[in-house]
Figure 1 (tube, helix red, strand yellow):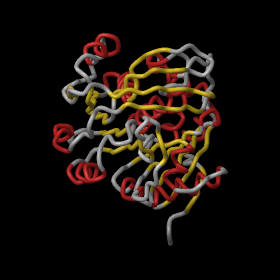
Figure 2 (cartoon, rainbow, N blue to C red):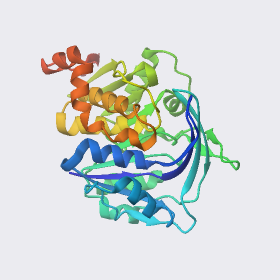
Figure 3 (cartoon, rainbow, N blue to C red):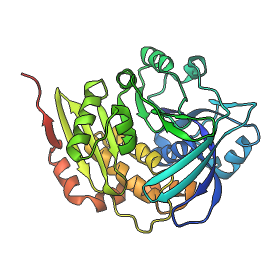
Amino acid sequence: MKISVIGSVMYDEIFPYKGERKESFGGVLYNILALARVFGRDATIHPVSKLGADHLPVIIEQYLQGLSNVHLQGIRINPEGTNQNTLRYPSPDRREERMTLRTPPVTFDELSPFLDADIMLINFISCSEIALETLQQIRRHSRAFLFLDVHNLPRFVDADGNLRPKPLESWKEWVGCVNGLQCNEEELCLMMGQQLNSEADYQEALLRIVDAGATYAVLTLGSRGSMLVYKTGGECYGLTVPVAPVQQMADSTGCGDAFSAGFLRGLFTLKHPLKALLLASSVAAINCEAAGLDGCRDIHQAEHRMKTAYPELFRQIDAGWSGQLLRPAAG
């Protein structure tokens, strides 16, 4: 299996919740490491990203050595350097970001060698990884399973480096190009252009995403768990699950990226969307148990953690349960 990952590698300055300041690399590097470890020998990971020449050898030495399934042909050196991000966590579930952007968007020509991928994961970290027109070209020329991590797509970086919300009036066009989508509560509200306050509100918004073209719509809810709405055979189903137990909280940075890696692994190897949600939650929990990129190191244990954390749900799914029926097939 070939997995292409589109997004920005960031040079991060992190101020964790109740932790000491640290410097690290982040951004799409979390996706790369999580996918490489979750899929192991079952997939090759092909990041498509731009960064400074001074940072590439450091990243290879510190993080990618020993990961023979990560291929770097899609990494391009950017003369202006690497994007930089300052992350502050005022609470475990909330962070503030300030960015210095140096890299231009990825073009369709730069992506063309990876159109034969089985999965293409697009993570909007810098707000402008690719243009909508580029995604539409990808959809026309590739049979890949396209998975969109909304992240900062409904935001922009102002002149002072602060992330600001912006209307995403074209959200249906973005969604219409992808097979699956992941977002958190704030991102979902920004996409929909309205405040959402309840589980019923969230379900309705995810149904709108499914109606716009995606097969899977995933919402992460921080310490309150996660939600999935998906369609199959003309019917729409949903499931909300609590977080998998965390043995010792260290750092929540990168949990969304670990979550998406687990979800994709579940879809393609466990071949069931509900199991994919449970696996994603378990991968994210393990990611929380170590600081920064070290959180990705033990996520190969996630399938065992999943069966331990959700035994009753796992039994129901194996017995044929598809989740809560949200909308029956028409007619």
